[in-house]
Length: 85
Image (cartoon, rainbow, N blue to C red; front, side, top):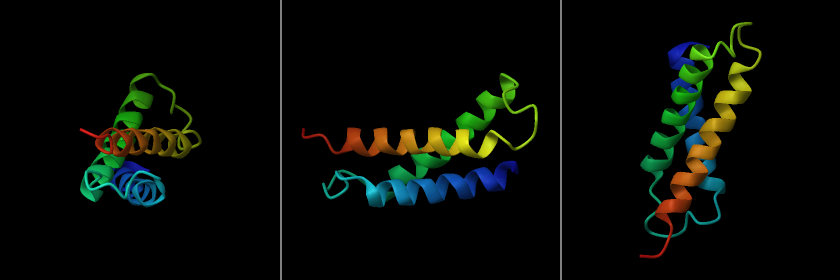
């Protein structure tokens, strides 16, 4: 997949996750935070998978694992920012 693919995946998951999250309508949930969380989540998943040799067979597990971790990161970021203060 490479790093450009990770960035594109993180941006796509960040945009979709922000748009689909039920708490995004609060004024604290920012789009740029969701996109940043998606990119950082996908990058973290790729680095962790490479360190633990989970992705030793190529790209079979890399796409779904990076997508799932990025989606969890976006959901957590938007959810935490949407809390009342």
